[in-house]
Length: 156
Picture 1 (cartoon, rainbow, N blue to C red):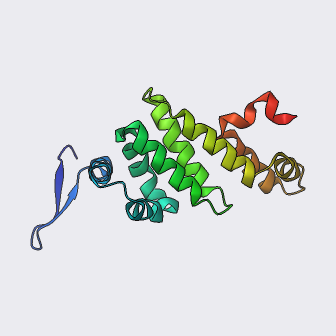
Picture 2: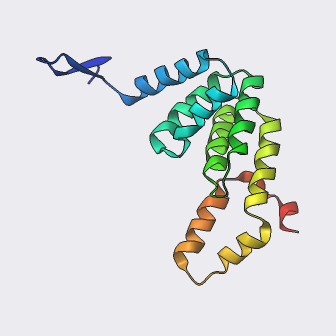
């Protein structure tokens, strides 16, 4: 539908946005108008592992000024539990900013350091040589998303 709002239930006056992107943009705009206290960051990070929230964070990251983006990204990396989920989110946000020509070099360095701490080179080699094709494929997919792993210097 080409409408901003679509009626879903005339009797109960139910409406929805014509496209999810509108809702995601409004949520990202709202997040960027709030204060940057740690308690707020915790609220932002809570739904990080929910895939529906990733686009909101990507949009929000492009709206943040550099200092807020850096503070927020470092906070998210600090929540990393070894699963790689928080590194994935920060990587997506960095890539979105790079696409907008707003690099976050301090964040990229922190991301590389955090990822290397949870996925050291030896662990990646072990996973890539594992007999399970599924594990090898998962490892390749994960590592291909992090451009700093492709550096030749990382392999020595």
